[in-house]
Length: 305
Image 1 (tube, rainbow, N blue to C red):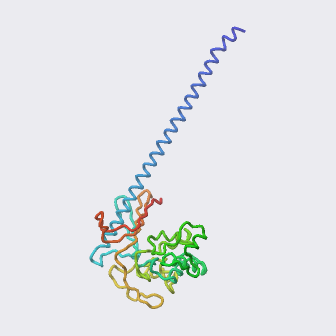
Image 2 (image 1 turned 30 degrees about the vertical axis):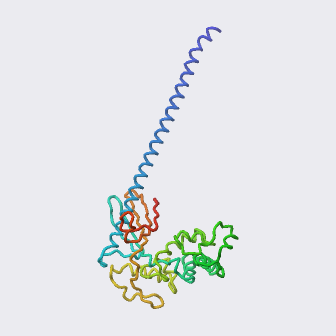
C-alpha cells in the first residue's frame, strides 16, 4: 500500500499543476481578449468623435458661407431665403444648406387668432375644437391681461392644471416657450415649430419665403397649391420678379422678405456617412460683441448619423 501511495503522489501533483497552468492560460486569454475589446472600443469612440467633430465644423463652414452669400450687394448673386437647397463640397464633406427668411414664418407675437388656429389644424392635425382651445391659450399667454379667452387659460387655469407657473402675459421670448402654453404637448410643438418665429414682426407671413407649414395656414391654400408654389418659386433666379404668381385669392406674390433674420439649416455628410446638422436662426449685421457679421438668436446642433 505504501508503494502505491508513493507512486500516485507525484502524478497527482503533476495533474494539479497542469490544471493550475491551464487556468492561468485561460485567465490570461480572457484578460488579453478584454484588453483587445477595450482598445477596439476606444479606437472606435475616438474615430466617432473625430468624424463628429469634422462634420460639425464642416456644417458650421456651410452656415458661414450662407451668411457670406446673403450679404452680397448684388441681388442677382445673393442666395435666396425661400428654402431652396444649396449643395457644395468642403474637404471630405458634402454640405447642403437651406435658408428660410423668417418673414415667411408665422410670428407668435403678431399673428391673429384665426391664423394661429388654421396653423394648428393644417400643420398639427388638430380638430376644430382642439385648435380653438389651443389658439385661445396661445393668445392668452401673450396678451397683457388676466382675462381668459372663451376657451383659453389664464393664471387660475394653470393652477387648476397643477402647473407651477402661469401665462407670461407678455410677448413670447423664444419659440420653445410655446411648449409651456396650457394644452400644448411636444408632438404638437414639433409639428408647428418649423412654421413659427418671434422675429418677423409681421401679421401675415410672406408667401414668397414661407415654408410648407406656414403656407398651409394661409387662407385657401391646399397641400397641392403649396407644393406647386414652392417648386415654382425655387425655379426663379435670384433677383427675378415673381411674375404671374398669385395666392388663391388673387393676391400677387412679391419678394417682400425682411432680409435681416434667417433660419438656416446646414448639413455636412462625410464620405463614410457620418453627418451633422446645424439649425440656427441668425440676424445679419453683427452682434457687436465678437465681431461676427451676424448675431445668433437660436442655435441647435446635433449628430444624427
